[in-house]
Length: 77
Image 1 (cartoon, rainbow, N blue to C red):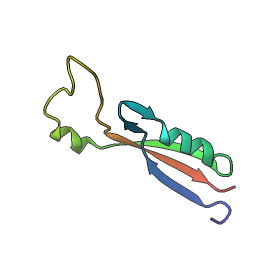
Image 2: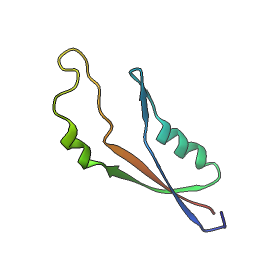
Image 3: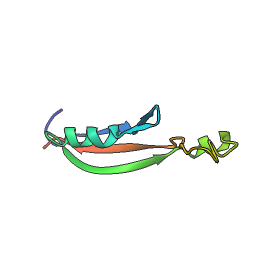
Image 4: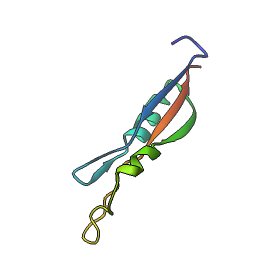
């Protein structure tokens, strides 16, 4: 990237076998070592809501269905 250029990365945190891996946050932290983290936006995928017909796991356990991504906006100094 040339100096002053911007980049947007779309990523979400990951859940695997009930454990949350904060991929979006870890990636932002790592990239901040050589790029400026200028902003973050949340991309909500409201069209997924139409496909969810029941409360998942209730009353025995809780798990969420990801319906958003992080848009990490970075800039090369």
